[in-house]
Image 1 (spheres, rainbow, N blue to C red):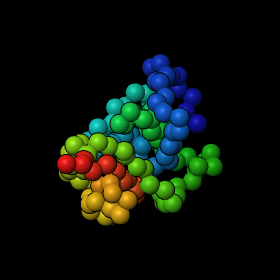
Image 2 (image 1 turned 90 degrees about the horizontal axis):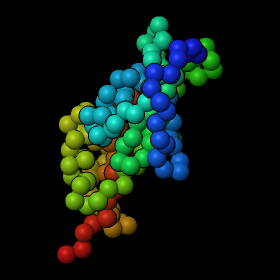
Image 3 (image 1 turned 135 degrees about the horizontal axis):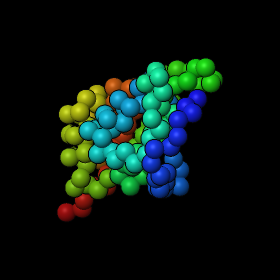
Image 4 (image 1 turned 180 degrees about the vertical axis):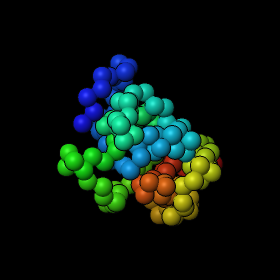
Length: 142
């Protein structure tokens, strides 16, 4: 574990449910999420001697996302992300810009952005760390 002292005050947790992802390369993921999803890094623990961190706190679209590296020696062995999707709820006027920024940053389109059977615009993509992301926005009525 990281015995280094905290370098900044703890950040405010936004929302009532916080996803906490374990990824291979948490600092790289945080930088990618800044580019792809406009994330703001509000807290982190400094890297250990292997370049890993136990905690990074991000704010994305009014919500909190927390990430860390894997620590096999602490029982946190690397596993491929599976069985969940991070979904961003957006306004119809914003979804195109959010979508394009994520694709331009390097997300792979899985399901193109389109109007779905429930009446909203929705699409799904995968980031370079294997995490599935979806975007959803209500369609504006004319």
